[in-house]
Length: 269
Image (tube, rainbow, N blue to C red; front, side, top):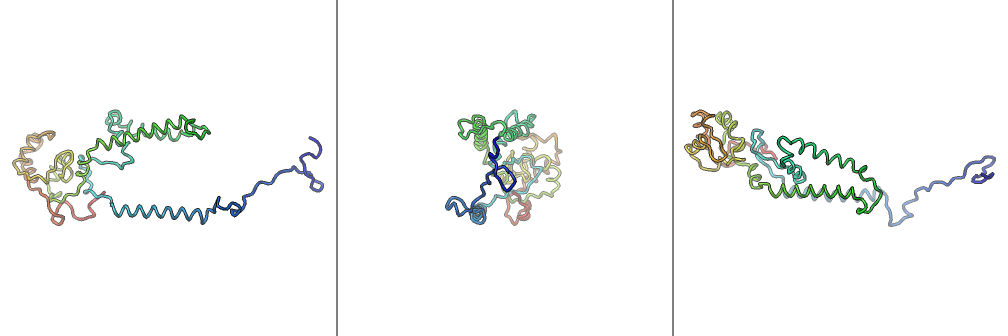
């Protein structure tokens, strides 16, 4: 290097010449092209958020969440339904190789693969291309995921029994006495799994609304009908008679006269 080239003389010292970094200039030098974060930008964010929040609150007031009857863990006939954004996972659990003995596949392995692919996405496709046609890995992952979610969500909606779904959680006021020993000792352990926790119907029919006499109920309990098994070998004649009379006396009542519900706090979503 030649003497003095690239150097700046400051007094008797020699220091390397360098350019000062470009400092941020005032916002006023870019009229209409930028704005201050506070309060200009932040104020618009607050206003937008407030508008959406007010709209959401109006929707919740106009269409409140429906309340269902009291949750009963012994009611195995109740079929819960997840919110719409989880319907695709709900449908996957219905497939042969993702349910029953293969439940681990549908509940853990398949969602785990999806989450793992999402976490590995930055390494699976690290291309700097901005055009989607030049990023086949990322586009293929997106299209496959969208197709699976869309199809399984549609299939879940199309094949679900919505009529039964709307009826199984419906609040019904009746004279059913859940503290009665017949209900506690016999009906709860033998009938509620199919007919519902309050005998208003599940996979089996509603026992409150039909006007059944004791003889008819006894015949059903002893001999069974359709998918209902016979209980003559499981219950004594006295127990069958007690169940028949209990069911035959069930009837719909008004809210004030109901014994199966005490107040609003007993209901749950």
